[in-house]
Length: 343
Ligand SMILES: [Mn+2]
Image (cartoon, rainbow, N blue to C red; front, side, top):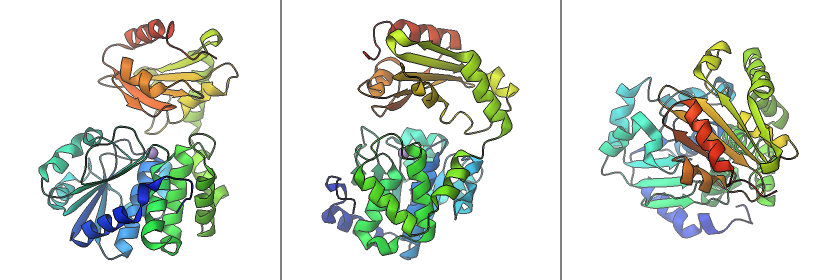
């Protein structure tokens, strides 16, 4: 197990998990809406591991994941609830054990929430690195991890040792780690994380190939959208170390926007020397979705919580505004006059 982590995966808790699994005939592994690399990577690795131990496991996410994740071995087995709820609903509702991976509240399952709530018998297990974990029968919750995939790595190693990391599991976990850390460039990139990554590479995860698949497979229209947003839509205020970008529905249509296309754009203003706080406002059918990123001490989890009905991590959080884009931006502009990074 990764040495510099606290006892998130201590032997007593692993025994508890083993007992819960041993009592279960069917296990449902779940991850969050708009699944990202960490959601898919951690969920796929967990289900592959449990399947190899002989359990009946199915892995469900509420809606589609971005196409660039299709190269992960086993990604075809991920069940998309919005597509196949007829078969998913009874399995989730009758599962003997529910494992929630990479999210901290059941509401993040959106339409899938009802199926989970219909199951009042199954114990719930949490494995997640977000703040404010729910009270489940068994929780592996630790915000010190930069990805849930790194947590799943430690969990598998604590349970079965590194021998249990197959090629398929290694690729899935590696993808989850690099997507949540911007290819190992932000978040808690600890010595332990590099040790885990070294092991995953040893087991067959190919860093160059995976970087290409994850970071260099965007469409021309996505790259042009990024160019347009940075050139025309980014507001920068060096005095308060803050920048933000807005994206309307009309602009999404203009650039043939696909799921996952806005991923990562909010981080880009942070590469400007004077900027330590970045926000991105994205218009959707029912609200303005807002992403916040920071580097250094400025706590965007608190910011999102306090002003935009959201939350997340200290350096990465999200929120929502119910109203037109102009109002969301005006509100933001007003708040950052007084609340912004000091340097
Ligand atoms: Mn994650």
